[in-house]
Each structure stands twice: as C-alpha cells, then as structure tokens.
Image (tube, rainbow over the protein chains, first blue to last red):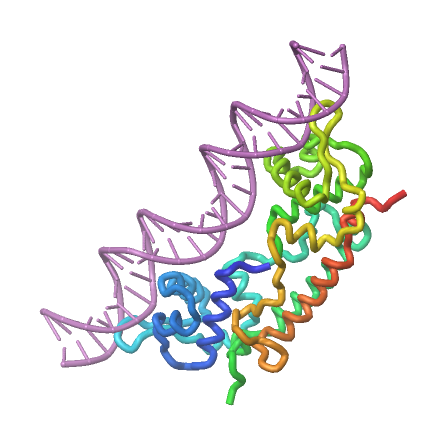
Length: 134
Length: 134
DNA sequence: ATCTCAATGGATATATTCATCCCTAGAGTT
DNA sequence: AACTCTAGGGATGAATATATCCATTGAGAT
C-alpha cells in the first residue's frame, strides 16, 4: 500500500510538526525517528523539492516544515515517494473490473479502498504531530 | 499490503477454481494469467507444499486445486508468500500505539485494517473463480 | 525398456528498494 | 579570510523481489 520510504517520510513530518518554525538538524531527526541519517537526508531532500519542508545549510541550520504544508493532506506526501496511488486498480489486474463486472474481490476491496482514501484526505501533515498541540 | 507474487497466486487460484478436478498445465495457466511461465512454476510449487494445489508430472499432468483448499480463506494463501500479515502494526512504528495512546493515523488505519481483515477471511480460494459457478 | 511430456529444483540473472560513503556547496562564526 | 557546521548530490553497495535457464525426476504412452 505504501513503501517503507513513504512511512519514513510520515514519521519525519510527524516529528517536525511538533517543532513548528524551528530548524531541526537531520542528525537529530534521525536519532529521534530511528531512520538512518544518510537515507533520511535523501528523503528530506525530496520533501524539500516538493516544498513540504524547507532547509537551511550551515551553523544553526536544519529542516522545518513549510508553514503552508501543514494543511497538506498526507496523500500528497505519499505520492511523492510511491507515485500515483492507484488503489482503484483491480487486484486481479483485470482490464474491466468494475461494479457491473466485478472480480471476486471487487466489493471487498472497494470497502478497503474507501477507508484508505478517506484516511489520505482527512489527515494533514500538520495532523501528524505525535502529541496533540498544546 | 501484499506482494506481486501473492497477487499472482490469487490470479492462478482463481483460474484453477474454474476447472475443478481438472489437471491444467503450467504453460496454459501462464498463458491465461499472463504470469511468466518459469516464475509461475515456483509459485505453484509453494502452493503445492502448502496443499493448496496438487500436481501431476508427465503426460496429462499439470496442477489442480486440492478440493479441501476450496474453503480455505485467502488469508492463508497470502501468508504463504508474505508471511504473517501484521496489519496491526502501527504505521509510525510506535511501540505502544493503541486505542489509549493512538498515533495520529491510528483510528483511520484501524478502519482500513478492519475491512481488509474481513476480506481475507470472507473470501475463500473457491470463491476466486472469475465467473460465477454455473 | 524406451520415449515423450510436464513438474521439480538448483543456479543464475535482473530490477527495485533501501542504505552507505564521501565529496561539494553554502551559511554562520571567529 | 579561515574555520566549522550542516545540507546537497553523485556514486556505490547491500538486500530483496522478481524472473530466467537448464538439468533432473517421475509419470504415462508406445
């Protein structure tokens, strides 16, 4: 449904969401999230290119959420790493699997998909903070 | 949520479910399902070891569903390839993420998981036949 | 017995994902 | 200007998943 990398990204953003406006070093994020530091930098770099985070080099630098990204649904984040999330695709990979001509899993899968889609749209990056805002 | 190999397995079983009691050659299954013949044989071999299918060598041989497997929930099939399906795991990989101490995605994910689990238990191998029984 | 057919199984190849290494660029400090 | 700090980026490595190849085994046909 989503890659390990995408899951990493959510963890990172959840951490950053707790420190709004503050530059946090990659090293610290890696330590707190348990994500390998080198790999983390690649992930954050992609998030930067999509304007989900901003970065600052040198002394006192680090990463922080872009304020505008706070209201971004996590769907957009996952798509950065996993591409278009086509959960609509038939599990059997039948060409024309739809309500009229359903594969044996169609109805079940549709229910899964509906809940999943709802999650992707309902949860925003800002909502990923592990602890509720004070 | 599941690997390509597991999805292949479902396709194969769906095809075999339409030909109960009949030996069907790997070559034919590969042709019908679009799965690479060599890879297909590996998949069927694993299914055989788990008594989901039976096989027969030589002239007139092939594969067929084990009659008893007809009532097997597809959960068992997917687990052959993907191991224990721990959808219960927290997306954030927090150690103690539960109803009392939920991560930001907990409730949403729980709904997805519930529907998914239901699918795994409700659909049986016999139920995978692409066309309804006559 | 011999032949042919089709699954079995081991070895190998390819692709993708995940992770590491190390050098460079840019920002603040002194 | 020299130094230190931290992100950026290219190249490489490791692990896993997917796919292919080929020799062997066992079964029926003759």
